[in-house]
Amino acid sequence: MAVTSFEVDDRTLALIAQLRETFGVRTNAAVIRKALALANVASQHADSDHTITITSGKDKPPVKVSLAG
Image (cartoon, rainbow, N blue to C red):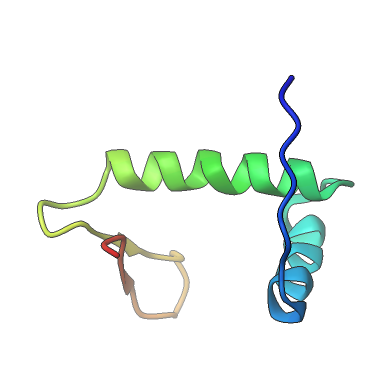
């Protein structure tokens, strides 16, 4: 397995910590793997305008997210 390192700011570090809890994983690497898998699924199902719509199935309105840079 290749080893990659990079620097992150405090905001990104806090988000990774939050996602560790959300994803139920123990390491930053596991967070990044799950986030990349989620991004891959989202990109495969994006509309022609590079957006996806997320619905919660609850009383919250749908959220449209742009995957474009």
